[in-house]
Length: 304
Image (cartoon, rainbow, N blue to C red):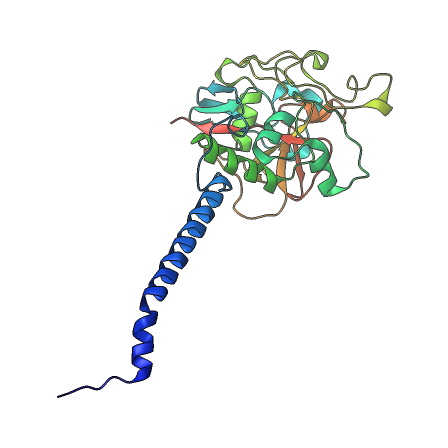
């Protein structure tokens, strides 16, 4: 079959060399643009895409939590003769309790430890309740306060995630056993002494220049108890894990408190209270959402 080419076809053939040069020129220009864009992207890339050398961002240190081993045993929990006439109605009847070994914090959780885990300082924590509230002791080694029961568990959850450990709040029975000195107990009314001034920051001594200036004090500045634990009498009340309920008279092993209720147990008294709540058997309680300037906490953990 014969094919006849027209004038338009001949004109197209004459233009081919020129078109080739144009295409080559455009290709080179496009290539140079792509290279320039790639170079610019590399120079302005984020650290996530291209790690850069230099100092790493500052990381909050893992808080140092000093724990004391408490060897298990059996003790009388509640109002016992050494409390004399100071016993409170909710600490009776006295009853036998047996506990396994456990660890408990040597000190109350401090403001520094709280900040390192929660990223919130004492002022910011106070402001969650009210910016108008005063601060009752400010500094790294002061006990943390203005924390409710639920917030202690959030702190513990984050601390455990960071450390790989299994911290928790002590049970009420563990708290009292440790406050009494465990199996080293000498039967003191307060945690570590019968002389409250030796072991406690309380209403009678926590204010400089009178009761109008009452505040908490740095942890560990009073005498330790028989196990080497500080501030289980006074400074700040301490949340424990138990719901509040009346005692029964039966012997118990590793009790965890009632299964139902609303109020949670507080132990130890505080800088704001007189001597009676400082007794090792005295039981306080509060709404678990309460944040006050005289409630803090300490940690416990099981034997791993």
